[in-house]
Length: 120
Image (cartoon, rainbow, N blue to C red; front, side, top):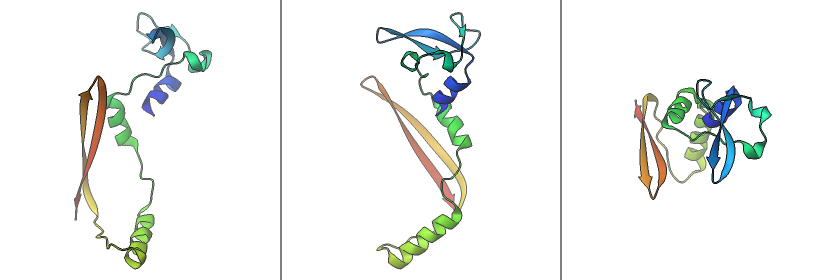
């Protein structure tokens, strides 16, 4: 979502060539090719989102909130204990860390995110 946020908050755009077609992408107001515009001034087929960067992943990790509550997890674990075929051990996570690895293969960049949780 960070590239979309960049488009929505941009005050300046510049034209870039994308497969032989000129498109508008957000840029710094100090960019020599910058033109003052907002995304609403540009047709959707002429808009190019900026590429996703590592900084975008890291920024998202800092602001992401859980999608389920602790109560949801407890209910799920209880159901699994009563109805499921496997029993779960429930741990309280005391320290969360992550490792982000980038790989370039055949001209494409792939990203692998590994999350570690030190449990009590």
